[in-house]
Image 1 (tube, rainbow, N blue to C red):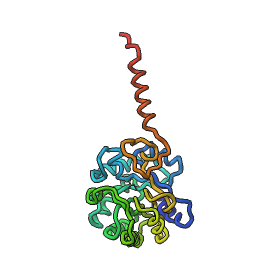
Image 2: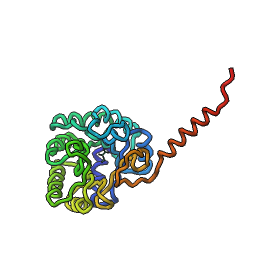
Image 3: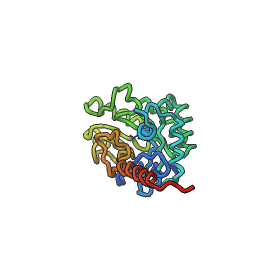
Length: 261
Ligand code: KIV
């Protein structure tokens, strides 16, 4: 299937179901393992800035970082749709947004994601018109964390909820195939889901409030123990096993008799 066909098939799940499953992936082995599990979409998210590159937030991520990790995930040739994030500052206007979306596609992305609503509509339209599927991202926008002074819940008031709907509708009109909603209060996420013609993919929005869910891989498998968001639902806790394996290796190597000669 082409990226366009995969994106269209995901969009059709709004009504046909089952709920859409999306996980972040930043490297070849993780992409293969998640693809083997039948995950629908692999998001090479700019969250890699924190959970892979060790930055405090996503505002340090560059297009070069994204291209490097998108290429690694694409080498797994997953059946899942590979979505690459347009990192901060890479979509200031429609022409630049399209040029950088094309670079992600050349690296192996089959779709791109960008943050924001009304002010991104023309950029989304330019990318979609060029045949590249676009996923929106509304609610808490990590690329604006410094301006906003932290990670805050969205959609708490009728005004905030109406603004979210207005932004989402602008994205839908511009041609997105789905919208990620991050840290939107469950009632509002449910309402937005009922109002929109494309699948909503929730993270930190409560369970079963959207048409699908996305999770950050390291939150799911427990390999970034230094910060786990309160809404994360780990299915494994691998970090103690990794440290134990390294310690067992150290003990084995240091207890070895010295080589002869
Ligand atoms: O970068 C990312 O991982 C994301 C998810 C939080 C949706 O955008």
